[in-house]
Length: 388
Image (cartoon, rainbow, N blue to C red; front, side, top):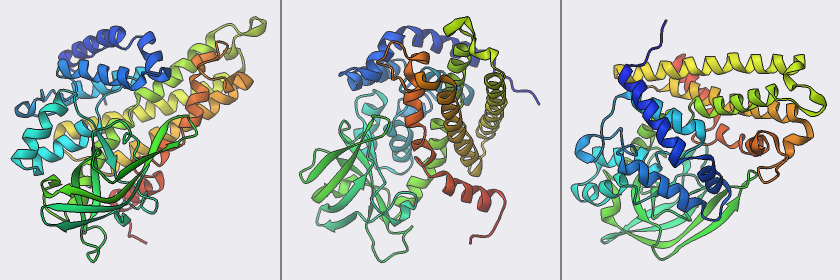
């Protein structure tokens, strides 16, 4: 079997890499990772993507996109992920495509153009204190009252809530219906009275949030599609979210950094790769990385043929996140005590990214659907095993 990209796709990849070398240089990257203006840097970068038509390159042209070939979309996402550049958002990946299919003309006119221009951002309002992995158990209530819905409840791990203008909100509109059938989706303004946003700081130093909804009135025009059909709208986008988030390039970037470190002269004039254990570990990870690459190409082929990657997306999600966790763990051991140094310490090998990555590597194994649930999807949809 051969994997080949078209000449036009490879030319586009080269153009993207030239753009990143200037607009996401190491200096810009350091400001985005550690500076006080980190979010401003990130948002300005996305605006530059939007100006080139790259932010919504997968969208149809009538909605401000370019409908670029899937190969170009894939190589674009890989190029961004390799250097840790911010790409598509919740607004681009989930809100926009759902509005194109199920939104009203007013919703499309109001939200799609500013999303395409990189001027508006949505947080993802799914998870709750008692509804994370089992998202269908969410309890935040939306009760119709005249021309409004009144919202009461709590959302947790709403990571962009402190900086986004809106939230793509899943709420329960029918408490008596089966749990998958009583959910609706809303375009909720985070500046509405009654919303309180409190920070939650993660092990890796990042911020997520808990959002309290106390008699928040959201206009009925913010309802997307039909009432009680929200689970269908949310689930349709999740497979493609997993494909775009859990790509190969992020793992490959960590591997390449460790490989470069292993070839450098260390204390005493010895290279770490002179140690058989280091060579063996890196060789093993190289094999695993190529397996992940093949799985990723498989999904690209499916999408190009018009197939819908379902359990296949779960396979990539599991393998990618767990490989990253294994790689970060191994890197920490290889670097020894130096592996604990952060990017702020000039003595930190690999720019301190291993210490940072080690702390952050756990979350993706349960973000966007826990790996345990992904294994159930593979079992039932991939192997046809009974639910038990």
